Every structure is written in C-alpha cells, then in structure tokens.
Image (tube, rainbow, N blue to C red; front, side):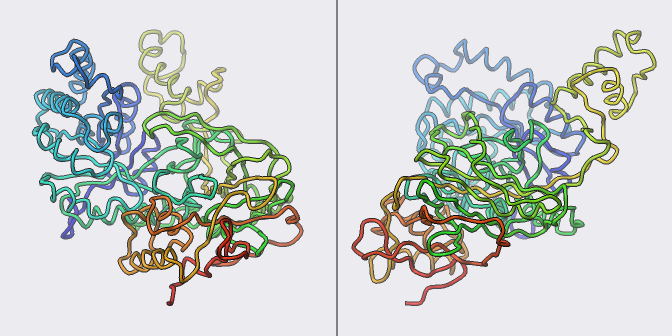
Length: 603
C-alpha cells in the first residue's frame, strides 16, 4: 500500500489503449466483466506488461438477490458459476492476473446504503469458489463509495474477501482509510474508480443542469488529488483512474480520457487522448520526457455577456436570437494546419440512468456554432459564435475540442487496434486461415509480422483493414463542456447571487475559506476544489439544502449581444460571471460578490 514511502498500484480503469497506459506509468488496469472483452484485455496487458484487476460481473437485477435465489445452490446461480469458473480456470496461472473482484456496485441496485444479506452472502459464495480454484490471487468486491452500514454487512457476511474495492469521485476519497477502520475494516482497500466529481455531486445551473468540470485540463487536479490521498494511506493498495477510454455518461466528455465520439469525427477503438491524462503522467512518471502535445491545455473559457467577458462557471442563459461569443484561452496550440478546433452543440441529457447502465449518446445539432477559423489560421477557431435563434427554447450543451495534429503517412493509413474489425480478421488469419488453409494464402508466412499481415489484407481487398502507417502520426486533444439555456426573455430561471450580510453569504464564505485552509473540499462541497469559485460553493450548498442558500445565477447574454469574428480574441485570467443588478429582494438576480477562483474574501 501507500504511506511511509511505499508505492501503491498506479492503475487505470478501461478496456483499451494499454500501450498508452504503460507509457504514462501505469502498473495495472481494471476490467468489469469476463468474456471476449476480458480475453482481449488479457492479451493487450501481456503485450504491454500490465497487471489486470479481473472483474466478475454479477447480475444487477434485484430479484436475483431475493426469495428463492437466496438459496446458495440455486440452479440459476450454479449455471452462472459454471461460466465464471471457465475464466477462473483459464487465467488463474496467468502472469498478468492481479486479483479478482466479485461484482461492481451491486448494492446500488438494491439499497445503496446497505445492500442486503442475500446479496453479500452471494458475493461470499462466489469468492469462496474462486479461492478454491485459485488460492494464489486475492479476491475482493467493489462498492459505490463508503457507507458504514454496507461495510459492516460485508464484514459480517463476506469473511473470505481479502480486500475491498471502493469507487469514489470528486473529493469523496479523503479519509477513506480512517472511515473504513472506524467501522472495523482492517484489511487493505483499493480505490477501484476515481476521477472528476460525478453528476450527482457537482454544482448546478439555475435550470437544473449538472455542471461538469469545465475543461479536461481542470480534471487533472481531480485525478491528482485522489491519487495522492491513496499514496498517503498505508492501507490503500492501489487506485484506478476512470475512465481510460470513452463513454457517454450524461455528457460526451465527463469521464473519458479519450474521445471516440462520432460527432467529433472519431470512431470506436481509434480515439484521441485528451490532456486530463497529463495529471496522472506527471504524478506517475515525473522523470519521463515531455511527450509531443503534453503542453496542450485550455486555461480558460469565456462568454461575452451583458457585463463583459466572463467565465461560465454555471453555464450561460441567452435570449433566443442572440449571437453568443465563446472564446478559448489555450496553451500548446500553434496557429498552423492541420491543428483544429471543433465546436459541437447537443441538447442537454435528461438521462437518470445509473452509471453502470449504458447510455445512448446524443447527436449534435448541426450548424449552431460558426467557427472563426480561417485558411492557414486554425487558431481563429478558438472563437465560436453560437446562433441561439436556430434553437427552440430549452436546455443545451456546447462543446469545444482543441486538437493538435501531425498527419500519419501514407494518407488514409491507420494501424489496427486490438478488438477492431481489422484485428479480428488478422486474428482469424493467424489462428485459422494460415493454419488450416495455407494454400488459400500463397506467399504468406505463418510468422508474418502484424504490420505485414495488415498490409497483405489491405492489398488483397479486405475493406476492414486500412494501409498501416510508417509514421502513425499524432493527435492530442483538450476539450470544454458548457451547459446553456435558451429562452424568450431574460432572466430564464429564478436565481440569486447572495451578498453580505445575508446568512448564505457567510455560510459560503466559511465553507470556501475552510476548504482553502484545509487544501481540500469535502462533505457537501466535495464536488468542488479548494480554489473553486464562490458561485460554485453557493450552488453546492443550495443543492444539498444547506446554508440557507438560494440557487446562484449563470451568465446572462441578452438578444442584442452579437459576437464578431473580426475582433481578435482577448482573454482574461480569472474573471468570473457578474449578473444583472436588481434589488437585493429580487427572486431572480442580485449583484454577484466580486470573488474570483484565486481571491480570498475579507470580512
């Protein structure tokens, strides 16, 4: 574990991009289920010399842990074990296997706080069977954040477990070891998922949209914070940053360290890494040479509102018919082609699905943002003009993707990725075609290299395989995600920015000062960082019903605001939103206290 100079495991949770994981200093990767995806992961882990936390997916249907299914030797469960058993027998002696985890957040489908005796007895039943087949590897289970009741239940019903895995986000990992020891858990634990705060714990806009950390660059701080907390605790044996890949969960950018979103020109298995990974890379492998593009980042996003250029910490509201000017202040981005900036607008997600359930990604609404890029001047695209008149009143989200690119050669080339259609064809060639029917493939040596085999398949008309690259090229991305609201007349929604001497003002002030003094934000404000803004802290207290706080305001962009491309973008460093000045007794707007993320408040 960590603590006292000991190094805990440096892990990533994801199914692909393992060579990239190794390059930034990862020791291990985490998976969630058995089957073909797991087989691929074990193969890739072997090539990249990584260990694998092997997840065993148990059903999320609550009825499987009720009534007759609580009988341990129930026929359905015996059949389920037979399938699990095949993978345990196949991989129990594998060099790549780190440990087994039984289930992932299973209690959240029954009772988040407690699970149930039937559930935990089933976890113990599976754990015992695994240990009988594979006594060499530890076995644990994974829960959704800390809860004293469920940890005590696991202690009571699951004595065979060697460690506990806990998925935590935002600032919820702080003091985890003390929390666990406080209820009697004295075995090791691992933080099996961590990253930016989840949608359930962040500030919200006045119209109820969850405010994702505004840039991937900002997410580096969230990864570093939790990783360091694990390192400092001798009971924490490893941490796995989430998500090493791409997934749509409420937004296109919330958790993924890669972009595979079709709306940005990407595709499954061939994504582009974003700059959030740099936080981990610098912590894990500080001695490594600076990779190409490692200096890419978004310093700030600003919106031109009625009070000037401001950071949309809680998004922005605009009257239908306005042209909203959005500016990005970036570093590590040269004004040369083929570098690019892509702007994408979607509706705001209304999904309430548990994060373990696959969500359907949203499609972009075409033609809403005009990029100010010009031929040979891609940096013009750092300004976008959003035409709100093309949208019906409602809640939306605008994304910006800033890309630094060096083309691959030859044009149109692409190296295969494990698990993509080309790889499956190559795998069939090696295992079946060249073995059983060598006469079908004259001149192809069974020991042919991956590159030569891909080239052969491309040349012989296999449309699944592009020509392999001599220089694979390079692409790195930084992105921003901003919620916004279109309405017919401002203000769109009730909100109020508190001022002294109102009770909420001092409650926010105290929470903010305490967080800065401690160097961490926990409890109701665990979805913020110590240097987050006054408005974000006010929103969090409001969301949790604390501090007698109303919902603070977003930036207002009235209809008469019309952004322009011909004015060169100018950027401020720490400007925050200011709202409309109305009477302090208004139920909509009042003056915002002039507090920026890097300022303290004097009473």
